[in-house]
Image (cartoon, rainbow, N blue to C red; front, top):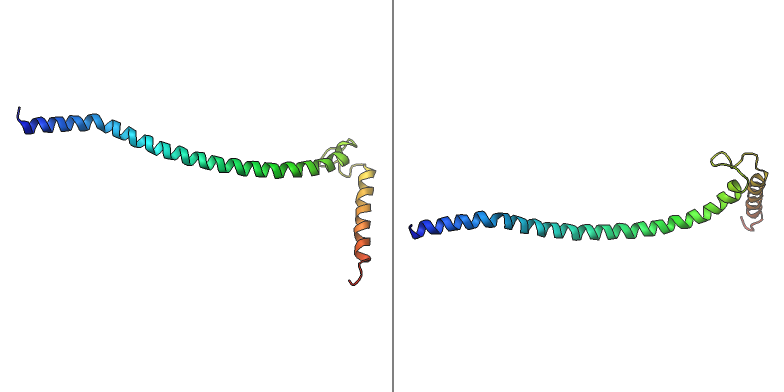
Length: 110
């Protein structure tokens, strides 16, 4: 066999054998980069979820107490239980309206 032919055959064999390995290495590098980017986006999403979950928990605690006071404690069912034969709720709303209107009427200079 000629040296040039042997070199060509070995070069073709070398390329054929190493081509899948090269593709696999490049795919692994792209996968590693993608997983790192996905982890960063997941971390950002987790932080946003924790922050908004905390804000939502605070609002839920505040408005949940009002819901318990006006609906759950007097056996009303939301959304139709707020003014459904509940005298205490109506009296509290009237008291708040009267206090707000009196505080606006007694302000000096307005």
